[in-house]
Length: 452
Image 1: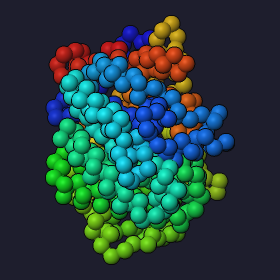
Image 2 (image 1 turned 120 degrees about the vertical axis):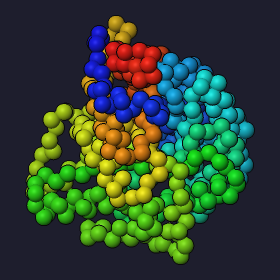
Image 3 (image 1 turned 120 degrees about the horizontal axis):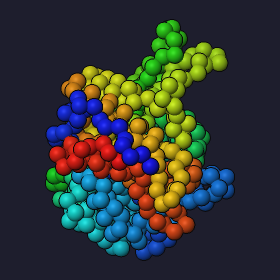
Image 4 (image 1 turned 90 degrees about the vertical axis):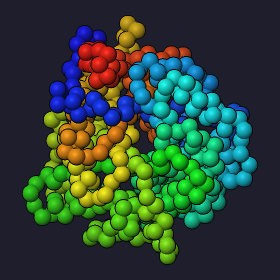
C-alpha cells in the first residue's frame, strides 16, 4: 500500500476548507438486499435482474451488501471515514409495496432507525426518494409511461417527507432521470428494459412532472428541509474544429444536459436540430416542473466526446479509463460546473456522485487502489477551481461508500472506498478510504491531509 499519497494543492485546500460538506453515497437496490423480507414488494429491478440475459451472470440485488441487516455496522463504517454526510436512497417498494395504498411499517421503521443512527453519529442524512426501483405493481399499470405514476410519486414523496423531513439535511426527488428514460426505456440496458425512443422522451417528461408535483406537495405539507433533484451531467468537447463536430456537440449536450435543465430552470424543452422526439406536454406542466429548487445535485463521471467523422475520431485517454471504460477527464467537471453556472440561475450545488470503478484486489488484508486516489484528488481539484471561479458548490459525495451491485454489470465493477467480500460480507477500507479520511481531517486542521 502507498505510504504517502498525493495531497490536494494549496489552492484546492484553501477553496475546500470552509463551508464544504464531505460525504459518501449509496443506493437502496445496490446495497440493501433483503429483497423478499419484512413486507418489501418487488421492484422493476427485481423483475429485470431475474430475467435471463439482462445482467452479468444473471446477478441480482437480492442480497447485495446485506445492508438491511448490517446497517448499524455500516453506519459505524461511515463514521470511521470522518465524513459529514451520507447520501442514500429510499426503496419505494420497501415502504409502499404497491406504489400506492398501504404503507409498510417494517420498511418505514428501517429508515427511521437509519436516519436516527446517522444523526447520533453527527452525520447529515441526505435522502433520495427515487433511485430507479419503481414498484413492479406500478409498472404493471404502465410505469413511467403513465402520467398517473407522476401523481403516485408525489403522494409517496409527501408521505416520506412528512415522516423523515424534520431529520434530513436534504431530500432529492430523483436520481438521474436520464438513466430511467434512456437506459430503461430507449435502449433497454436498465429496468424495465424497453426499447422505444419516443416512449423514452415521454417518460422523461413524466419524471420531471413527478418531480415538480412532489416538490409542490412537500412544500404544501410544510416540509422545511431543502428539496432538490439529482442529474447526471457531462461537459462536451469536439474532436475537431469543424461545423459538423460543433453541431453534434450542441445536440449531444442538449440531449444529455439541457433536456433536464431547461425545463427545470427555463420552463421549456430544447428544440435543437437533431432532437427527434417531443413529449406530450399538458397546459401547466412546465410551470409545475419549474418549482424552485433549494439545491441541485450533479453526478459527473466523464465527458461527452463529439466526433461526426466516420469512423469517429478516437477519444483521448491521456489519464486512462476506469474499469467501466470511461475516460478519466477531471477538467470536464470544472468545465461543466462553470458552464451551467453561466447558463442557469442555480441554487447551491452538491456533487452528489463522482467515483471510479477499478479492478480492486484484496491482498494481505488490504486494497491498494492508488488510481482511485488520483481520480478523487484530481476531481476535487476541479471542484475547488470551480468554487474559486464563483460556482456555489457546497459539497462532494464520493460514489460509492462500498463496492455494491452495479446494475446490469452485476458484481463485476467495484466503485467503493470500502472493499466488500460478497461471500462473507466482510468490509475492508481501501487505501482510498484512508486517503479520503486524512484529507478531510487535514482540511479541518486535525491532520496532514493526504497521507494514506
